[in-house]
Image (cartoon, rainbow, N blue to C red):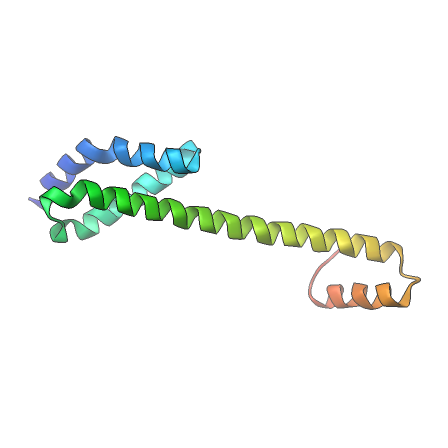
Length: 116
């Protein structure tokens, strides 16, 4: 019974979930991943869902999955940016090792694990 209900809901709403995810992310692959994630959550929560609230639940879960994915990408992008910025700073400092202050900053960055 659960399997049949799940298939019916997936058939009815999978495109709506995908389109909302694509609208938020702008990327086909991300929208596909989010759709799969949402449908997996649907399977796990199907018994607790009332028939008349399935669509609203799917839209809410899809929106939250998009927000979570956006947050993860932003955190990754920021850390990648910080790494590049520190690498650039390290390269500039290594070129001016004659300055004692620059030499100290350079050594500190190397101790933190940044490599040239």
